Image (tube, rainbow, N blue to C red; front, side, top):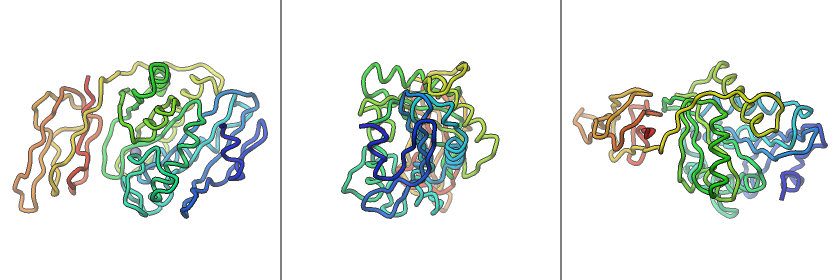
Length: 316
Ligand SMILES: [Zn+2]
């Protein structure tokens, strides 16, 4: 399958050297994903770019919108499909993590189900394109209640060749930290399992966005597209830190979250990174670092529920 045959029914294809815009309907749901199909003047790879799998991550959503608008098909070798954003219902509801129809985290239900809930069906629809893609770029950022330093996650699934391509392209993004993941139910894990290399990028935070962040994100993504030879031009190389893995610390209590450390702090195993207290100020639990490393994100909201991520250590 290629992009063209998948998107023909959605009336979203273009001739060589042209671009078309429209919506990808998610069958059996009211969801329509705004998308741009860019057919390059020359043949080449098929690249899928998604922004806004999480509706509250604004810099990546504006980046996807601007990339779709700015990329000139005459400059492209291959085909690029940009979805901007994927999770329109979550975006309009200003929700963090979850979708309004089923309360599910879209990035935990990949590869989705054709006959599932709304989030599962969105994932399934995106996964059809992931399977056809030669490379998958998934743009994220800190959610409405998350502070983070720019980093990029690639999947360690899908075999050595897929992993190597993903890792190389991740570095071309030029974000300071690059980390591998073995998550199965996220977007790029599902893509990697289907044999498609890719990465999940993180930039921006806390329900805000700025032109500067968007321009940084666009510049970084264009560098990746050059490294994949879909756009022409010199590939800039930046020194990045490869991390061994990401250790996410999750809440074991409902209550109020107090983080003791900041982004990019170096932490030692056993060190207390924060605590959750009840509404009377009593400590319900202390949260200690399980590894040595650097803090990649820290949840900024006072409110916390059991199972929520609190912080993530990039293990050096
Ligand atoms: Zn996200």
